[in-house]
Image (cartoon, rainbow, N blue to C red; front, side, top):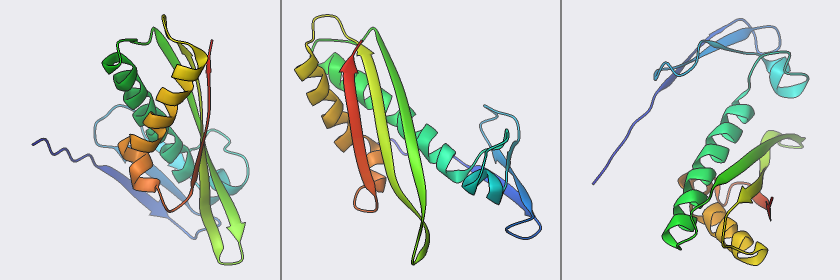
Length: 146
């Protein structure tokens, strides 16, 4: 049985509205990623946000799941282009992450549009990040062949 743990760290200085943080991925895959409240709620201005990091995690997990499902079905993908958009909404209860929209375009020899959409839906419903988010927010999908 495989168990994997990954770690990220943040150092935050100052208040919510005027402070700033630095995100570090312990893998070393990126440099320090600056984060501020404004990068979450206004323009990113070269900084990241928790929502962008969730979107990146979801897009990469979904693409792996879709690639695996297509390959298992005998139609391995040549290419998958996946974008994820994570939405932060101000509600009466405060700020909430309310949804993630996955948008995938694929080049999959030997597969028709209907088969691709079905495979994408299965990946959306079954990838580990989707399963972690399921029931907490809406996950939507647009899938098409190139």
